[in-house]
Length: 203
Image 1 (cartoon, rainbow, N blue to C red):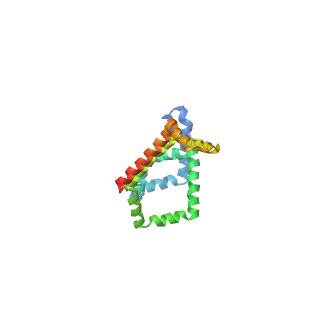
Image 2 (spheres, rainbow, N blue to C red):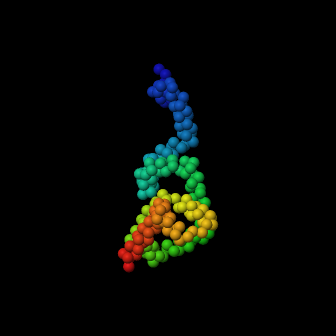
Image 3 (cartoon, one colour):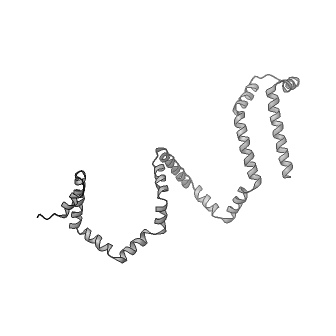
């Protein structure tokens, strides 16, 4: 009876399609054994002190958090590999370098390093008046976008280019008959009225 080698037994357990891959693995294992690496690994795994130290190193807080957030890390890497993200990140880094080179970063860091300055900024940000002002400003900007200020200014410039002198009577007539003029005037009056109400509330 022919004694089967370890390689023969392993080959009989797998399909013929995978035989080539397994043979390569066996060859690699044999080479590692010849180099003494398998004995080294075996000795280390049998060393309790080494195993304890290995687990202590692997189970650090940073490593545990890394494993817990591995999915998020992969998603971040996918985002960072996007061409547009890379280009925007490079632009941001260039901007940071420019700010750093100008000395602005040091000035800002020194300013924010003061607790008194940070308190002042917090008071400004948390100020109800400022929040209301920013809210009103945002609403006003949306309205101004709809009005198309540039078109209105262009029309005003064109009107003054004619060089015609307008009498008081003609101006009053336009105020009374021109729907666009009346609407613009009502807008200005409403704006002034709103500002007056706010001033009365704060005084």
